[in-house]
Length: 423
Image (cartoon, rainbow, N blue to C red; front, side, top):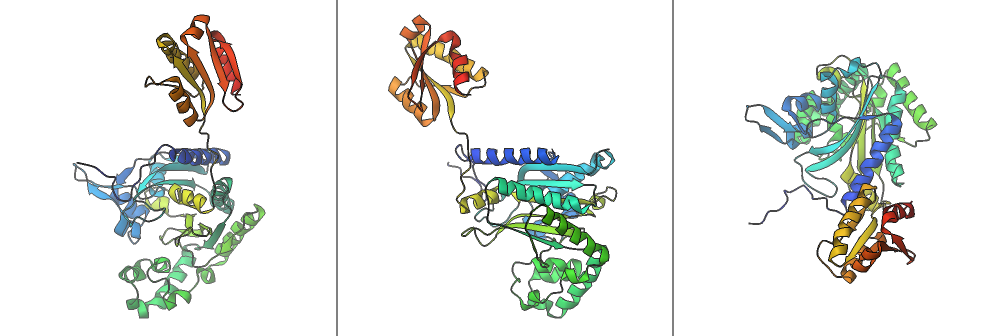
């Protein structure tokens, strides 16, 4: 019986996984510079968390969650996104009481959604995201956006478009909500079943519908920007001022929505405009969610964050023809010739590794020529050859594979020699 990987998942093999490691390390370094600390939450949570934290009118909750009942009869869900779990942890561990505010967190880990697999979209995917909890300052909105843009640009991506919008405060959202209901209700029967359900529950979600996006009422739907009160307009203007001062280009799109009821003020997406990237151009999405902490049982606490898919990021790099500067070389490959030399080589390779040098040897009793070919395939910077004759003299021949220069080195100084040569 043969087994195959489940649909919508992938094996990331050696040769490819190095790209993931590079991106993840870059993200961690970037978060360190922005003073965001890593948080790790379980890969599954109680289902109720996502019903409250993501929203029961979303496609994620209605159609895409991997939910099951455990042996104790509890409804458990594999996490479909990162924000709800982070906020749950924030509340459960009373991080809102920490002296340093806002609390700035980031996460990297697998998420799970049952959706139709396509290019750059999987049922298990890796998400990188940040959450800043505890500040109403529009400067933190600009900082979160800057961090996301910084990651993409640090990797060399140039064909990017940042789109922002304001969803306003509660008062503004309430007025806009009624305007949307009035706009759509007479012809809501022409829309999909999901939109018909959303009309009363969350009419802003209609604007995000993929099935009905070309319906004529979409183009004439009331804009949230026309319903912003004075404080919401001022807040949005400050976010734009900060972005401008940071040198970050953006477009304002009044149709950009984050459809959950607790989202407010800033919403944003970063898109790829690379030719051939695909119909779905969004790389990253984020926004401010000032009601989410309360929804999950905590005190009134403002928050803002974003999430992005590593798979989508890799697809964008490929679309722009960008190769990552991966370190794929081996420091030293030690070749053995003779039984006694083979034993000593095992010791020497271990000593190289203890000194922090990536080293390898033969484990298949291959001839010298085959060992040298293996060293070449591994891109070894240096090859050291030890035979029984050299062992008797307590020397080893070390070859620089780039220059071809060969040097006889004493065994006692071999590790230090290679260490210095690799500096």
